Image (cartoon, helix red, strand yellow):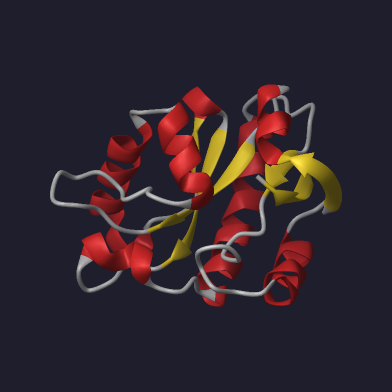
Length: 159
């Protein structure tokens, strides 16, 4: 994994795919609660995203995996597991085990999409998942990302 300076949304505006850290959960209306951080910015840019992702979370529940949202060139990357009350999943701390699992799945998705003919000219932008609203420290998360993500991924510390 390489490191980039700058804003991840500028990378996105230039055509790069980016990772959106999420929780696995849904509100009573079926939407995923994307009320803070990079998820809120993504929901503001793509108003259909919370309903689309909420439906996936309801279907797959605790087994919700990394998912590409091709319309927005986004990878939805679970960092907070499903809570007993799905609408409260966003309040939990991020899980290092879930970040490890999501990083593995993200690398696999990139392989699958490339095999299917999708071209990724720019590296996939990855924020410090779990470090803003997930209460993890970069020193906990960066080694996991470095272990599973190669140079087709770029770590951005700002979004």
